[in-house]
Length: 172
Image 1 (cartoon, rainbow, N blue to C red):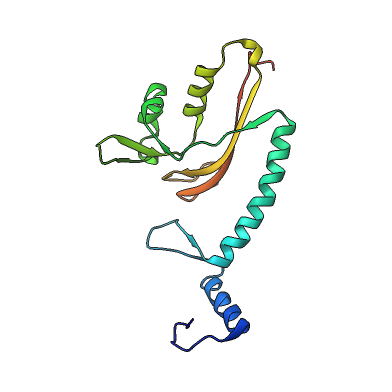
Image 2 (image 1 turned 180 degrees about the horizontal axis):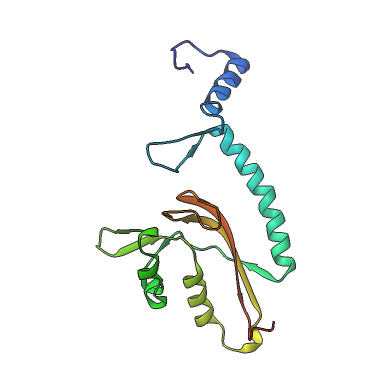
């Protein structure tokens, strides 16, 4: 293995120093690529992030299940059909990352999953006795927000936990 200067890195200490250099390219451990508000994590920061997410996700799962939540796994790549049905395809507009696939079908990177979860529940629930229903997921979201919402400007890609609740009435 060699470092950027071409000198051979020897032994465990040299390997550790090489790893330290990989994680110290910026103070956050990420390298900002050409794109604005987008980051790549270097190997050691990725391990740290994975450890925090793993333990954090266990706590989130326990708490969500304690209130009756059932975990979902949702896709990041969506079709616009459900979004058009709710009118959010037009109202959300420029905040959506959309593109055409090789078959010229329009696709979008999921900014949220309310439309998809509602469609699933509509197709699966057959009786009011199946309510209340609490579904949650933690996944990457993709948005191109022009300005902060509630004082927070998120990056274009971020992790978010969402819980979707379905009840018989407003009182529950």
